[in-house]
Amino acid sequence: MTNRRAAERADIVLGEDWDRPQSGVESELRAARSRRSLIALNSSPLARKIILFNLMAIMALGILFFWLNPVRDSLVVQRERALASEAQLMSDIFEANLPASAPANLVTRDGIDPENVLSRIGVPDGMEVFVYAADGVPVTSTQDIARGGARPVRGLGPQQQETLLITDALVSIYSAFSNVLGNNVAIEPTENEPEAHATLVAAAMEGATVLRSGANTSGQFYAAATPIEGAGGIVGAIVVTTAAGEIDQLVRVELEQLLQMFVVALLVSIVLSLVLASTIANPLADLSAAAELGRDKNARKMSPNRVRIPDLTGRPDEIGRLSGALRGMVAALYDRIDSNEQFAADVSHEIKNPLASLRSAVGTLEFAKTDEQRKRLIDVIEHDVHRLDRLVSDISNASRLDSELVKEEEEEFNLVTTLDNLSQYHAEEAAKQGIEFITDLPDDPIMIAGLEGRLAQVFVNLLSNAISFCEEGDAVRLWTRRRENRVLVVVEDTGPGIPEEALTKVFNRFYSERPANQFGNNSGLGLAISKQIVEAHGGVIWAENIRPTEADVASEPLGARFVVGLPI
Picture 1 (spheres, rainbow, N blue to C red):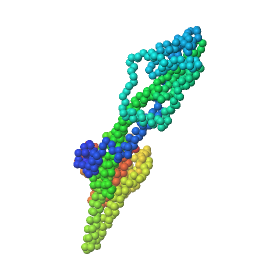
Picture 2 (cartoon, rainbow, N blue to C red):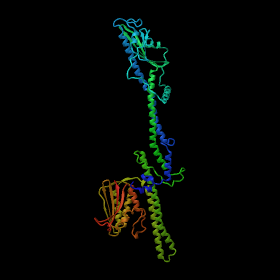
Picture 3 (cartoon, rainbow, N blue to C red):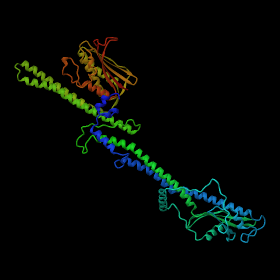
């Protein structure tokens, strides 16, 4: 920290300033922060909105996914394709066992033994195969014969997963939700198996593989029927059915996995939302609380302790910028308050001097015995009245300056033209006093943006001061030069110069370094007002003495120089 004294005056929390004694406002802020948990949902509408919107997004995604139910649709399509392929493969096996040239009959077992062929096909558990003749008469099925059984597949085990109780509850909720939305289309149970197969066989006799879904008391099943073609044409059909509820069980397994992932994602979203809300809502709550604790609960009086804004400028986001802006605003506000308090104290001090002189002159006037004494006292009274009038006018102008600088609109103007017009008037005034007035202005225009009237007030004040400090035979010089992105306006005189100890004081309010014969003719606000105007335009102003090259710094100056730098 480079300027700790300034921070102490502004009473703003900066870095190591936290080790200072706690104020009442800071104590309340720390107490409120200690009572707050990770995030206070009851007192933070912003935190509730962050969490709610994050949860709404993931909930909408989950509901949309489960409602569309792509897992079930995909499993159904895959199972139907596999079932059709299995039915066609079994039909090919039966066709391979038919006589090549002689006709065959599945009912009379002429040319083929359906039971023998079907028993040699390894039908997996849960699947049923039915063989029908061309006229739809049942021939045989896996329910009537001993099943050969499918060969075991090594490395492929049954899919068994333990599910959490909460997952079972979510599955039940999902099932109820799906039924309400009507997403799961209920399939009417078939009256009886023969009638259902008769419909499939009749369609398969047309020479195509037919798929159908149905339901019974055990659940939903899928069936595929395909024709058996011999040498003389279609001799029969095979109907392959899945176990009832097989797809429902697979869908349930997938659904449980999805619900588990959904629960994990929901919990992660809640935790992340809490962390995000705490990093946003808590700092904002601290900033707002720090601003609000400057007043009492009823806002009837201001707290005697100054507002102390927490330092969050280390955050590389908008909250850090907001903290810096608030701290800057508070610091500027307290600087203005301190300045106004100091200004009021200076005004009261400056007004007391002429008032004391007036009171003394008025009190002495009644004791004056001669006209000459009365005339001198009246001159003193008149001088003090003029001094008070000038002082009040300058104080009024200085107090209104800030608001007027904000209200007035800046315009672009030619600085050279303005300085040339001012120099013509002051050249005449200087000539009346036998003072040489020199101008050195460029021919090319210098365009700047600002308040022309206010800047002219600065240059008038500098030129008037320079002339007032000169005597007959002295000289005043006004010159300006352009330097890259700025312009310098310099006012020089060959007067007595400025005491070294006063170079930094001449811009203070009510400070005046005048000869004795000019006492009371100036309020000491001119240079202070000039500095305020120049700085409001983003410029700088300073004073220095003119000395010959390589001269001793303790030697008498050759005059004074005031420099105004303005941005272009």
